[in-house]
Length: 333
Ligand SMILES: NC(=O)c1ccc[n+]([C@@H]2O[C@H](COP(=O)([O-])OP(=O)(O)OC[C@H]3O[C@@H](n4cnc5c(N)ncnc54)[C@H](OP(=O)(O)O)[C@@H]3O)[C@@H](O)[C@H]2O)c1
Image (tube, rainbow, N blue to C red; front, side):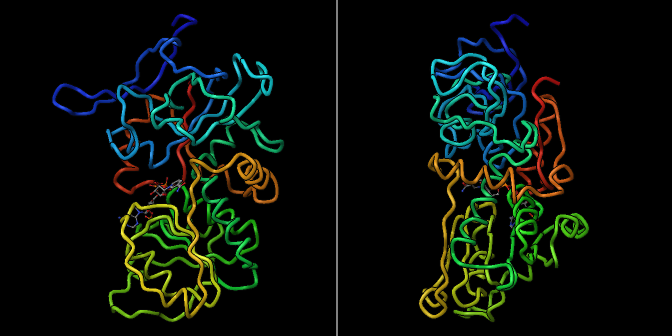
């Protein structure tokens, strides 16, 4: 490969409108304009990347495209005085991997405003073990704490618990001292979840109430929901007085059929989590927490590392809801 070319996953739309992905060679000059050229060492797989890889218009509008909302690596060249060649940095969210060529390629070129210095206490690979999923989990935990919930205040429920955001949420909550109930649709993953720090494991069915009741017995001090739909509605109705429920995902459904009583009788807060456009000040605060007091002991055991060539099958797995933990991509292996 020449020094002006690099390896990347490229998703193309064919003449029949079908989307195909392949690992191919791209030219550096095909990257968009931006102040920072980053040699990407690691990326990670998020649900949104899988949607981008199959042509979901809700994520990516323009193809051919290289997905990957996460990238960690070394600055190759910089037109900004904020960064210099050799700096270890992280980029996630904004338009990366959406309509800007993303981390499933060995190089990205991005605006300097999107770039975060790798915090002390984290290695590049560890930052991608977290990736957008871990960042979203950490933001959710921060909202729970800001909502006034303390570890002794009761159980925190995590839905979609074996997934990327879910598993990271269980591990971070445990590290922050909370008692966690993990909900999963997978059989045989109880040990994985208790190893991450869950005190108890329940099924999706336990969390799907179809009685039509407007309020259910208050069980949860707080909730980190990653799935949406009926499970989120049931979780809100089962949240105790002044509880905080965070919502970030829609793998089950984007619908939310809820009434006002949990909010006006129990003072429940429903907090939306948006990582893509999280302001830089808060982004840095969350990364600081992730690199320090919230860094789980089990970060390694939540993750598997694959090469770019190994990514294809992982995309199929995550689309079927089969993801367990996190998948890291080593771009140079
Ligand atoms: N708002 C944001 O900023 C933000 C950031 C990151 C991710 N997200 C969203 O958060 C969600 C989770 O992302 P992720 O990367 O963690 O995905 P993921 O790794 O695929 O995890 C999702 C988990 O949800 C559960 N699940 C899958 N299909 C389900 C269904 N039909 N009904 C109920 N549960 C189901 C599964 O866990 P169990 O088998 O254990 O139940 C699955 O592992 C996605 O919707 C993603 O788009 C949002």
